[in-house]
Image (cartoon, rainbow, N blue to C red; front, side, top):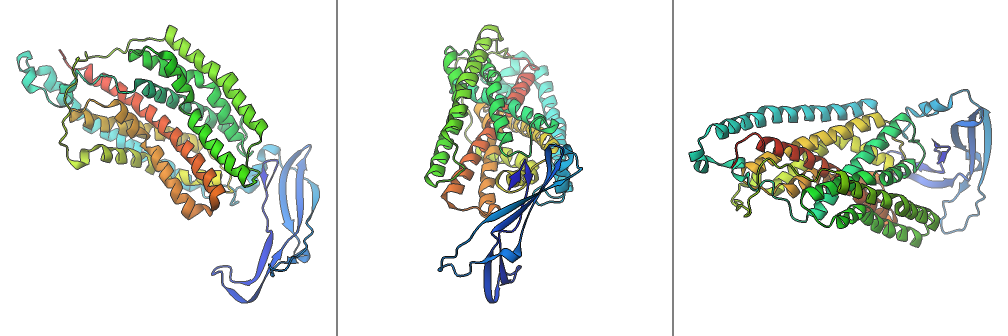
Length: 473
């Protein structure tokens, strides 16, 4: 229970003659209900700064016999006391509470784990890849023109196909633009939460802030997607803008309609009223859509439409080798690219789940912001490393593969949600399962788009750099 964002907890009943550890009944047990709640609220001037709730065992009601109707009269009382604690320091009393995340050192362990992984990946890319690329550059720059045809192999061999644009360019550009938009909105949200502009203890404030920030950043997403679409020689830019506008909101709407329908069917108070649903729809229609169109129009009229590829693309695509060892297959690459970033955020992810689906309040947004930035870096580095191995085996279809590899961490997050639901949450039933798995699917999809877009942009810079350093016909 919360009063002015302050959590309160207390017992609603008790069972006598039961072993608290083993859960065994010794003799005849009795189940009691505490129908009276006493609230003690502390105030400093005109603001509530503390809140506790207690029960009175003397007024308990025996409800052991569930077959016999027992009349129960619920009541409560409120006591107001003056408290000298400042309003900004009111959450300090909960520092050792189970409502807040546990040991602070555990979060630093998560950050250190992520940072060490970043250092290892940086060393890998610097020492291994740059050494290999240096050898490749030396070999490609020093060979005679007469022997180019017979000396070419590896990633240099596909210089005429590596910048061949991917299939389904409209969907690809919309995914990239939406990923950039979600990344910017998430960084802004964490920054506002860190500075205290958005209340982190008020239930629903984070979600409401994300909705507003998403609508305000639609211009960025439309601009990025439309600019990339024109660089791919796209003609129907309006379709690209519509894809960008609906790529994330449409799946979210379907999940919300299903979850809200289930909540209404069960008579749950979690179901949003029609007025709230209409407000969200009005914000999207009157704010998000016009800003999306504005972003697309700005990209059409003012953005640079030249892709600036360092090599020319041939008219006929080169055949891709099909015989590969199992450890260089697409499936293995997807597992590696998803597991390594997930291992860097696993510890922090547990506390975020406990805050979202449990009783805890998450307050360490500085560490969360740092962990999110490290996640983007780790994902981007892994994408570049796997991209080099893909190009080395003469596979030029790197656009979609890089995006999917980078976004695989979102799938790992969704897989972890199953483990948390069945082994940590204590939830059950159709209503709770619908809320949990529905909204976790949306969150995982958002991570898929954000990390995929980040990995693609780093990979694009890498590809342009290495192919601009070699002599190509």
